[in-house]
Amino acid sequence: MKTLKVLSALLTYPSPEQVEALGEMRAVLDREALLPRREAAALGGLIDHLASGDLYDRQEAYGLLFDRTRALSLHLFEHVHGESRDRGQAMVDLIKVYEEHGYSPVTTELPDFLPLFLEYAATRPAKEAIDLIGQPAHVIAALRERLAKRSSPYAAIMEALLALAKAKPDLVALAALRAEPDPEPDDLEALDAAWEEEEVRFGPSAADACGKDGLTTRLRAARRPAPGMEVPPPVRPVITTPHSRA
Image 1 (spheres, rainbow, N blue to C red):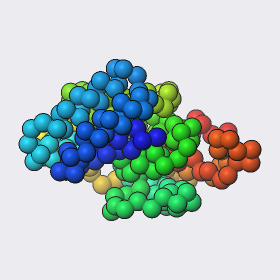
Image 2: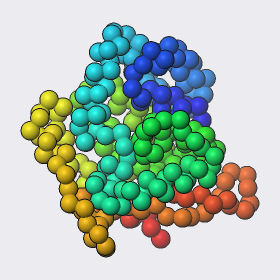
Image 3: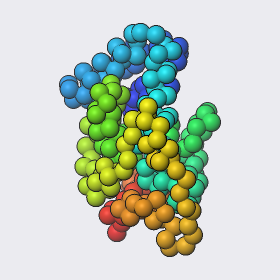
Image 4: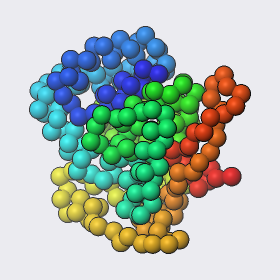
């Protein structure tokens, strides 16, 4: 699904290379035509936004939006595990998932970085890719709401992902995310409070260290049939919620 590759590229830090490729990205979206009209139009607006104005202004705006506020972090496990010890193991498991499918990202970003995750999903068969992006639907939905609140054109990417996944967010997990602090990037006092270092715990209570019982998640080994194959290869779910456990 090249559309996922485009969404990944649009969500990365603005660069001259990104601007140069915007026309090609638009062509891919038009050619695959996987998105409903409303979501496709919103993405067109984001592309127009990135193509206009000063690049340095776009870069500054990106940093203020995604790098300063924890509520808008593009690292999925930041929202799932917070600072609990489970986050480290989840990172290790996600790297193994990438490696098992021959995906070797050329980046220094952590494996749960959303653009990186989308780039990986784009390498998988369509049905599997859709399942992958649907797993963190509650995180994507929360990001969409927070971006829309700020009238950010980047909300279009989250809208597109939810439309592609056709997955209903876990309501309990989404409610927990909505209850989290959502400070503005220029509210330094609120930012300090939101980024305050949290206690790391061990044992059964470790997953609760971030105070989000409804968001206790783990990466578990599982088997999922691949399209057109009778014998399912080993595929490990990437992001799940407690409510999805058997």
